[in-house]
Length: 135
Image 1 (tube, helix red, strand yellow):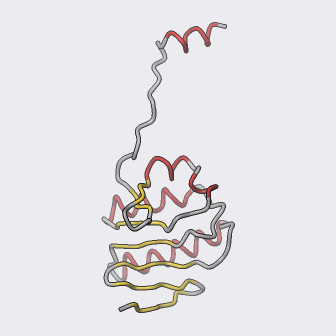
Image 2 (cartoon, rainbow, N blue to C red):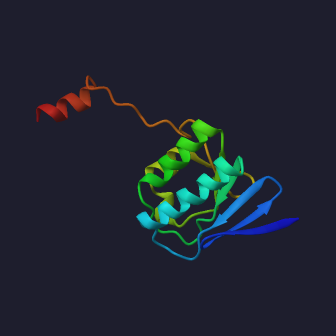
């Protein structure tokens, strides 16, 4: 059974333990949108003790840089499981998204505690890098 709640202009669908937040059809989130989301997440996590949250990202083309860090902090400090609905290509190309989100069998992108694919590490002693640095 699905229950719907509202928090300011956000709609929250509750499916068992999962809370799906709908921020609306805005394609660009600014600092005010991030503040609203932070306030709503604070209420769900700290007051309602929710530990499984998904955020509807289907319309979003741009998000403030602090968005992913905010989710990661709550995951690390409060044990909250976060998932995103499939976002627009612009968001999927963001480094945080590529490194820390993995698509599950339901098509949602789950936040991981470790990078999904580690970045190639480059040593300063690498011959190619050394040659480039001396040119």
